[in-house]
Length: 253
Image (cartoon, rainbow, N blue to C red):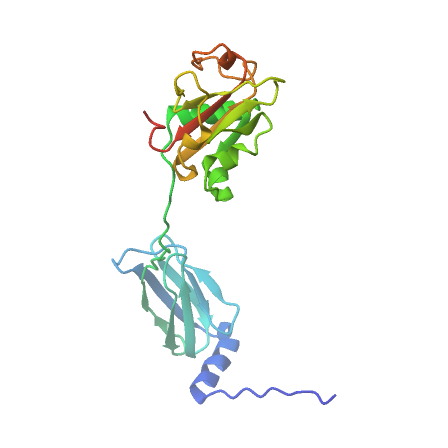
């Protein structure tokens, strides 16, 4: 394999700067400078370096710095400070000279992409919903879980329950407890209020659409149900379980 040779060409001015920088610390010239911001306030701890060398100094609390023992010639200085735009400048010094340049740093303002924060308004009832869900009693569907199913009817979500069966009763869909051998309809609550159609079991098709629901709870019997739950008028409703539906419009009532 033929080795590749890279040839770098430098303009005369650049070559002069590089040559002087390589022999920077062999003379008697001095650069005493000051670094300020756009309001002429001192910028302390600014890093001042001579390019092409290992020479670095830091500005003091007054923004002043000094680079000594320089050989006469041209130098490229770089001034950097976190939060400011870096500055580079050419400085020429003569043998035994002391030059006093001033450097002005412009603040660097970071532009952030706009951020949109979306959050649902909490309510005491929803906090209670989350607290009951954490206990592990019953079955729960959050708004996100409901949305993810893309269900047309809330009945489709209740069909997933292991605590109730959705059974047809004429044109209606009735929730029946899986814990009873006989027909035992569950009690239904919407925003904490028991709903019924006279003495007949509630038609689950009458529940709000999934898009309007913030949460659903299903309990298999009184051992799981919250103590505050109001009971229905029928004796069966005391032992057959319950379905609690919380709506987005009524969750804060």
